[in-house]
Structure formats: structure tokens, C-alpha cells
Image 1: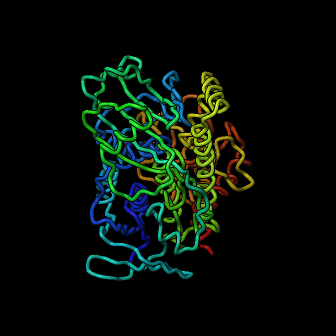
Image 2 (image 1 turned 60 degrees about the vertical axis):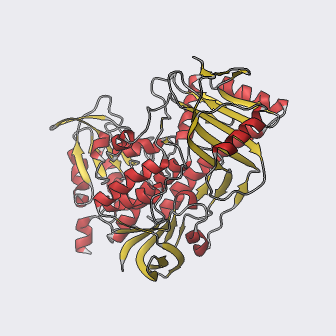
Image 3 (image 1 turned 120 degrees about the vertical axis):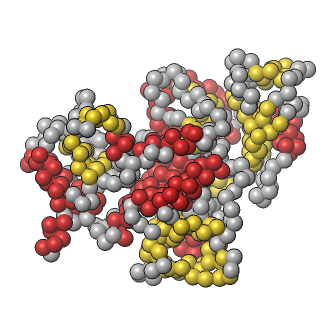
Length: 515
């Protein structure tokens, strides 16, 4: 084999996968058709569950340092309205205004530090697999060549050649509209009011949030004291656009059509144009080919694609590593499809709901949006909606007869831990992306039960306030594979722990040596 895993695409998903594989001791080779990192504005930030995963890997501070501005207030657009989370003490949804090109720079540098090989200007033009390997046909700067690996992951975006080569269907639809987004500075003739409205000389007030006209939708995101204002338009159009950059003149023409008058703009710091598609790959795995990111799913709403794609990568990497190291139990790689296809379906659910809310133009649609916002005046539905958009409500299906604890399958909370070395957070223990057995009740029986996996699973003993369980078995993707109830008897807890360890991390070492 030339390498362990070929990664096609050096966007956020592919680079995150490369970082995770290196942490797991696997050799990835990233092949990217573009000769250099993109500087064309694409996504303007990331948010949701991926921020917690980045913090658990020790990367969030680097991402925050690369941001050109402060983190916004906890609010997000949903179907032509805004959902405000600022009234919650612990909002379930956060965002980071990190442009995609800056995010890719951070991840590129981290992948290089970890020893991942990235080849830019190398386009994968064909993929062939057999029972033991995958071969990529590559067109590089010096001509065509082939490279072979145990697995190949398609992270190359919506037009994925890998998905097509694997014969994976990508059903769905494209919505007949064009969305244009700009971050601009405004001239002195436009003032930002304390409530986020714009006061335009000679015209009057343009309200913050969303304004619907007969010709489209206008979104305004402005904060007093901030020099940058976000403007967004949606118009019904059926034409296809290429990847050419959008000009300021094109955006101003769109503003004029939607609003009916021109809106003065001093300078644009970001301009982008996109259409919305709702497509979901039928399979995330086809033999030794696995799909992640936009190659696997396209959602008809902003603010979710990077979160979903990078989370795919974190889920996939450790499972590939267990297989490559020769310890994978039966069906482990299939759980990548099971878990992430389920998560993708949840994201598709709320993004399609957003599209239905936003596209309606009659009085009934206006009434639906009004009722929706009234529901979000209450804390419980507000929290539920925030967690849904963040991807924080996902509970991975945990197979097996012993998985009964309500924490099983959920994302591990960042508990404050008191250890013999001082106080730390659970997230710090996950920086190395290794499986973790966290003993919160000084259970020697559970630590001994895990002893046959001690070279694969880290074992830590700690105390925490109001412990949620006696022990937690935490996978590298920070999901809880098993939990012992408080004061659960050894007769139940020990065999359940051993079953979970074997199911996720392979046969016990003692059993493997005697086999």
C-alpha cells in the first residue's frame, strides 16, 4: 500500500479527517485538485457541535485567534426569521465568525504539524476498489499516476467524482432561487440604530432581521458600534451560476430589485452567491470507499454544512484507525453510515423545514412564521430548536443488550474533574483522540475489567460534583459508548463494560493472545 487512507479534497472535512487520522496513528494522503488553498469567500463561519469537538481537540483557541472579529450574539436565522438565544444562560447553539479560508489555513497547519501529506494540484479522475484496497487514478502536475490505500474517503464536495465512481445515488432537489450574501461597510448616509435597524437618508428605516417584499427576501444583520453589516438577498431564479466571484455591482442590483430602491454601500469585505440543494447520499459507505461532507449531503440552509461535514470526519477517523490497526469488531465501519446518515437526516429535516417556512409568501405562510416565533418565546422549545440546529440533540444508536443508560450515545459533557493531579476538564483528556474510561466512583472492579484493553483505552479516575454515572466509556468522537448507573452492581456493570469495550475497540488483549 502507498498509504493507509486516501482523502479526496482538502476542504474543512478532508483536512479534519487528516488531522484525526494522524492522531490515531494512521497515514493519510490528501489529494486536492486546486493548486493552492482557496481565497474565494465561501462559508463565513462555523457553529454548533463542531465547536465543542474543536475545543476537545485543543483547536478552538487557534480558531478563535484566526477570527477577524468577535463572536456574534447567540442568534441564528431559521426559515426567514431569527431565533434569539441570548436570553439563555447556557445557549445550546454558538457560532464562530471564522471565514472558511481561515479555517482551512488553521486545519492545514495542524495537519502538517501532525505529519499528514497534502498534495495540491492533484486531481482524482478515477477510483477502483477490490476486497483489500482502493486505487485512485490521479492527474498531477507531472502527469498521471496511481496511488493505492486500504480505504478512500470522498470529501471533495457536491460534484464528487468519488461518489459517482462508487455508484452511490444522491437523490434530492434544487430550489429555484439564488441567494446572495455580502458583508459590507456603509457610508455616512446610512446609520445603524440601537435595535439593529438601518436608517437610510432619503428613504427611511430598513428593519433588522428579515424583510419580505413582492420581489424577494432581504436579510439585515447589524450591531451598533460594529463597522461591518451583513446583507442577504433571495430571489426566485432558475439559472445556474458557475464558480465565478460575485461582484459588488451584481449584489447592489439584487438589493435594488428586492428592496425597490438602491442601498448605498461603501465597501464589501465578503461577497458570495449560492443556490440551495437538498440531497442526501443513500450510502455513506460502499466497500472501502466512504463519503463525508458535501459529497454525502447538501442542505437547503446556511450555517450547517461545515458542522455536519467536520463531525462526519471525527466519527469516521477513529473507526478507520481501529480497522487499519487490525482490531475492528464486525460491523464497526458500518456504524459510520448508521450514525452519520441518521445525523444527516436530522439536519435535512430542519433545513427543509426552514425552506418551507421561508419560501411561503401568502398570508397563511406569514401566520405560520408568526406562530413559530411565538413558540420560541418559551425556554423549552427555544432550547430544543437551538440543539436541533447545533446537532447537539443527536443520540447515536448504541447496539447491544447492555446499553440502557440514558447517557449512552450522547455527546459527553465537559465535566469538571478533580484528580490526584489537580482540577481539569473532561475535554482536556480528549485532546489526543483516544478512547477513555472515566471512573467517577473509584470502582476498582471496572478498572480491572478494562485492564485487557489498557493499551487501547486510557483509564482515568476522578471525582465530579453530582456525578451523572459511576463510570463513562467515551469514544474518540466524544460520544458515550456505555455508562454505569450510580451504584450499579458489579454483576451488571462489569459484563456490560466488557461487552461495550469489545464491541467498539476489538477483542480483549488477553483473549487475543490465547486465541
